[in-house]
Amino acid sequence: MAGVVEKRLAELGITLPEPRPPVANYVPFVRTGQVLVVSGQICADEDGKLIAKGRLGAEVSIEAGQRAARLCGINLLAHVKAALGDLDKVVRVVRLGGFINSAAGFADGAKVMNGASDLMVEVFADRGRHARSTIGVAALPLDAAVEVEGFFEVG
Amino acid sequence: MAGVVEKRLAELGITLPEPRPPVANYVPFVRTGQVLVVSGQICADEDGKLIAKGRLGAEVSIEAGQRAARLCGINLLAHVKAALGDLDKVVRVVRLGGFINSAAGFADGAKVMNGASDLMVEVFADRGRHARSTIGVAALPLDAAVEVEGFFEVG
Amino acid sequence: MAGVVEKRLAELGITLPEPRPPVANYVPFVRTGQVLVVSGQICADEDGKLIAKGRLGAEVSIEAGQRAARLCGINLLAHVKAALGDLDKVVRVVRLGGFINSAAGFADGAKVMNGASDLMVEVFADRGRHARSTIGVAALPLDAAVEVEGFFEVG
Figure 1 (cartoon, rainbow over the protein chains, first blue to last red):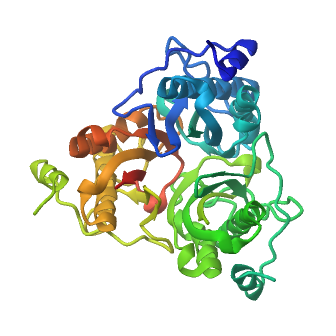
Figure 2 (figure 1 turned 30 degrees about the horizontal axis):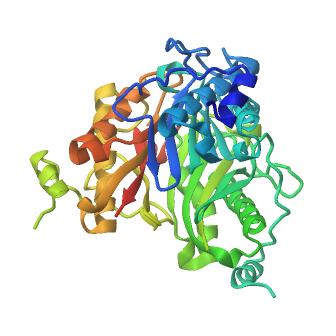
Figure 3 (figure 1 turned 45 degrees about the vertical axis):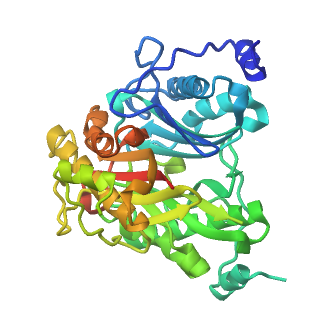
């Protein structure tokens, strides 16, 4: 039987992808105590193709960046599900770290990062309301437009 | 009755501002276990006006950056107080993350970040001595010169 | 008697340096609960000399960046040993944060960061397999090519 969060994902029309293996010598998540730490996820789709490459404030629009951030969030959830088996075990989304590939001076990183934050609140409601830090970075792996990492309190 | 930390703030001539709401769809802090995670704070004053915009190593001097970092720290403490009611409940400042809006090659980020670190030690003495990572970023929300996030162990 | 991890370090030909004091007003590590948070370490050798300065994708090659990341990892371990006395008390390397000083668009940050990740797996085997976020930054303290921070679960 699908859990509450899985039903909500279905209502939102979101299908979690098979979690993708890390691109290098690390693991997608580690649990320590009640905290699940999930590695930074880039905006790659199920086939491993980036949906947005390059810099906000240059080649990538805010709207494309928001979609990229949302996909990073979906990729985080795919790993959370793999870690826990059941997304209902998420007690709280504690913190997201948002890394926006940015041209110097790009000032709208917070808007871009809302693509990931809005997703968490849509999926988990109040349990999805998280602390967050958003920064504009000079470069990201594979020239991805956005990377998002997450800390989750789990039951 | 004011607590020990509040008295220390008064001695230092620091008045905590009303904590400012996040600029986007997230919350200023989340507590998980004994750790309070506070979202990245930019160098905005009580009216929401940035006291330093742009890049260190370009438009912003080290001194202005240090004042900006100190204000980020004050904004962190405003949220900690809102979270705990009483700043005496802070057991330890565990970690600060310092994000310095930087021209390529700006090498003095650690000096800038001391604006926030010195504040924590002035306010909390030994309990304020924290781990820290400082990086120079390509961009910050609203083109702020400095952003600082914090993890606090709380009682 | 040397512990298991110390013997492994010796097999790998790694001598941990004297842990270097922070370059500013903070401490190298803080323990909270079962988590040891270690401050961001730059690629400085025992004499405090950076083994790689400047940007990946510009002045610094991927190979030099990997060596720099490995040295950051060794510097992390020096502080972990100072914190715990015995590296066998490391239960798990939970998370590494990798900050790669990068020219805009440098896409191989993950390869560079493997210098640190591979080290942790060589030293701790499965306990060294960690979550990780890697970003390309505009600047680092002292113009270091790489900085790495770490969270460790400790017994």
